[in-house]
Image (tube, rainbow, N blue to C red; front, side, top):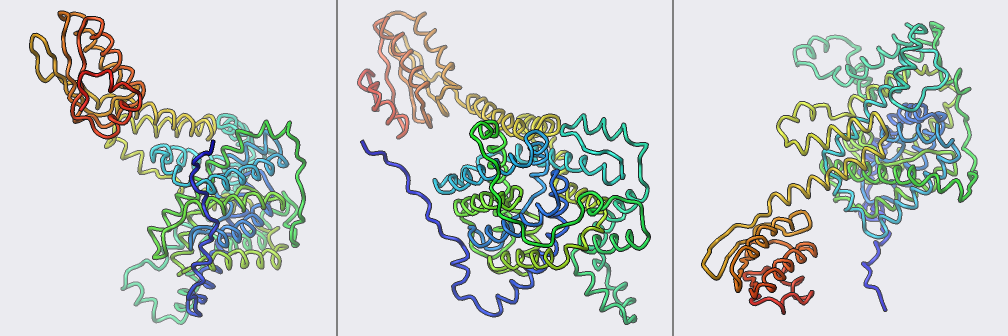
Length: 547
């Protein structure tokens, strides 16, 4: 017996299409955009890794290797891949519970799942996750990221932060006496600078004319185009070093960043351990798929490039996540902030993403020793800013405009993400979405009496007759049992949209109740799907009328 399986997706990177008709003008734009994004990625990659409980080089080489593979093999022209803030909470929990070696195994396994999702054309299924669930866990992750950075922002003397929400609050409260005003000042200046810098030249024309008389204005304009995180990193690190501030740095905590390329290493693998990593693996794969495809949709809206191929994108994400663990990396996915930066910097093709990876690699290989002077409080400020921008806080104010179903899904997902973990939150959100959808659809279905005579009852069916609404046919059965023998029931199904096997069983119960009392059941106006199921089941042959 042969199985009629759907065709597999073809492996066709968007880069191949981008290179058709490629010219020098586009290369110049892509080089500029890629270099800009590479500089922006530098502080973010380090900050994401440190916040995840890893060394900063894990984030840097993930951004380099995964960034290159996702751009070279992906299904979008302008998306930038690398470590993402959404993974911080997940990775930190896995490292704390299972260790770094098992994180690498879970990441590689998730990469295999992502590749298979794309290969079997399941990329579109990610779109079925309700937006209320996505907003709920995104805001929850933003809160957890912000909370995880309070230690370094305040300079508290905490050797290792616990993994769960309430334990973190307890640890922070218990160590408030070790507050470091220098760290707090650096972190606060970083946050303020990140808010102010992009708006530095968004001033009125009168102020511009006043500045025009000074020779320094051109230099200031050029400087203002530098990415805000890079400006904060350089200026505040120099200030901390020049003033010999007593703050913790990358050098004091991690001993600096190795200047060479990481060695290829195989993580210790055993089936006994792999069985424990099923949930972390599924979590990484699910979050990676959602983040990358949401990012790709944002890129479609902001750029003039062709729409993304979700299946090719998932296969590229899978390859990247399989490869990076062998170089000590962390999970990677599409990153919205860097993708938007890439688009606004003029990127026209996936070449920009490759240049971004090359730029970052060059900076790391040349300037790695300088990173030891970067204060952790500054990186904490960068992540606090990321967390603020990551959260969709306006959605809480807009809840009053939505249904109770929407509010329940969003708020419960948000709270469970914070109190428990993302996996439970997504599972709960999807279960609630299914239950509420069933309830809503069952409420739509109705059975209206149309006509009544001594020997016949006529009803009209509206909506979908499925397992959630089948009980609404029980009053017809009760009416049949009270009526005189020989009653005929006619169901007008012209407004019946769909029918499932449970709904078919409910119709059969009506038929059996009539048959016992010498009555008959007929259906008219059947649409294509209900008619097909009724005929395939053989129920049509037992009906008095089936039209």
